Image (cartoon, rainbow, N blue to C red; front, side):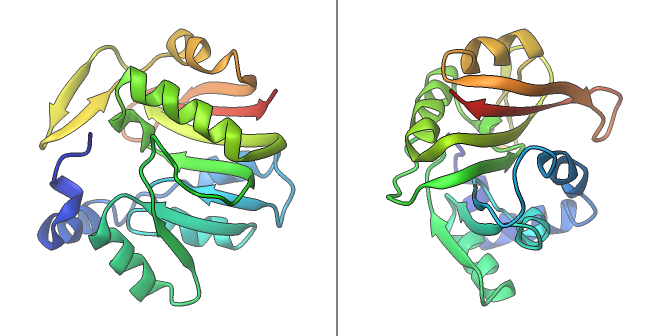
Length: 189
C-alpha cells in the first residue's frame, strides 16, 4: 500500500535528501548481538541504501525495494550489490536467509498484509533465522504524503509475531522524539 510516493524520480530524490542524516546503525549493532557475522540477510525496503551499506559491512546482504526508482538508485550507487524488486507482503524470492531486516518499512502494510508478510518471512528464513524490524510507535493508521502508515505498540507486535517467532528484543527507542519507535528482534520458532 505504498501508493506512488516512492515510485517517481522526484519523490525518491526528495526522500533521499530528507533521510540523508538518518540510518539504522544503532539497530544493526543490536542485530549483531543475535545474528552471526557473515550471515545471509535480506533487507526489505532498502530505499536510499544507507542501512544496506552498513549491513553489507557485517553480513552477506541482498537489498530489496518495491520501487523501480529506488532499485535504479541502489544499483547505481552500489554497483557490486544485489538488489531485487520485492513486495514486502509476498516476498516472491526462492532464496533462503539467516536474517531479515527492515527499518520503518513494514508499517506501510495493513494488518492483514503484515500477517501475510510474517508468514512469508518464516518460509524464507532458515531454521532459527532472525528478524529485525523497526516500526513507528502509535495507534491506528493514517495516510501521510499519500502513503499508508500503520502504527504499532509492543502488545500489538507481540500478537502479530508470537505464533511464528520467539521475541528476543522488543523495546521503544528514539528516532526523532522520545520513544517514537519500536525495535523488534525475534527468532523463528
